[in-house]
Length: 540
Image (cartoon, rainbow, N blue to C red; front, side, top):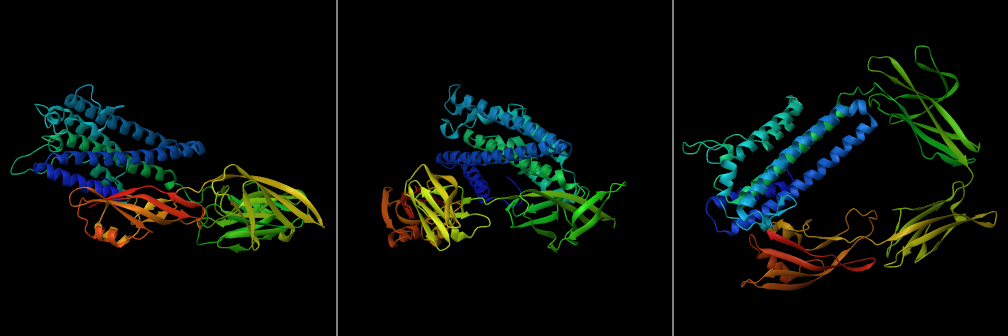
């Protein structure tokens, strides 16, 4: 399933499926059928992940078309055709599942919900006749042959969108691998069709799981070709056929007497040559080219970027512009105009939270306050709401009360010539710090090697993707649950993050398929203690 670099989850699912298929072929006990349910459920998660990933790509196509329809329309339409063909093929597979489950468990089966088969609810998981009846048929003309033909049509269509060139072989090989329908090699002189080898004589639990795997392979191939098509939007563009001069000022607004600073650069520049940037008046020539007129300024260039600085006391809008000069690939000199403005205002209050746009309860939130052109010593903030304001050297922090909700209002007062003046306020909503997640060996559960578990030696509380990097949580205690030799639950209390001696001993004694659970995990942070849940592992 997939190509090149597979995720650990994909590798795990593939290995589980191979192992279960081999065990089934050896007539292992019926419990193996329940393991197929586990594999099927994991595959369903993989399918959902591909669906989400692919939907984002379709959304990106829509956004790009809205920006430049003439350039993107071709690739956008091809993407929609892939979605239609992919959805049709997946719909056919789902219909096959429904047909078989109704034959196995009856038309009123609870295993079919909203058109989807819930593998865990199949009653006759060991039925090995319906798969043959539906997918193979008495003459070999069953639905499996229809599925094979549809997959081949789909595969050929995807291949038609990816030219057979050396640089495209990774994508083409992925399509061929994911949608492979070739007959297996003969065994002991006997030949079998692809559909016979996939569905014949297997219990319905295995057949449903195999069909779900094919769904995942289809969505994987869909993702690969969508990524390829999206990459074609700009691949044929001539880098310098439509250059545009850009201006990025540090601020478009300054006060009278303050320095204005901006970076000027060309949008698509050649890293082997620096542009020449002129600021001043210019005119357009009859042949469409541009040239500078009158007196003008040549900007210094730093890493391909021109830096423009000027000081203006003119209150209001100040216009400026010029030409960016580049040598074209054919040796000719091209000049591209740019224009920009900046605004000069009277003093303005700036109030912002340094790390975020809200305040988090129970922790220190950095606060930045300033007034352009005014000494920081003349600026004093104050707050109204459930919390406190504290000075840290030249900086400020706001600490909302633990568990506080609502809004904290920050007011800025300045001292101008000995006279205090309120010049601005800003409201900040209060949010709780999100819960950290428990991890062992950087995992939040699932399968794990005993050596990895033993090497980790502790449970960590990780605050993921949180904007305030200085906020940390540590694990205070948890309960470890395993099975004793008689099969009864065994509970061990552990204080602190690291495994105590009893837990470490249990971990060293774990065997393949043993299960260990860390529950009632208590983490402590700057805002107090939290129960961050439970994680469970199965030894692989």
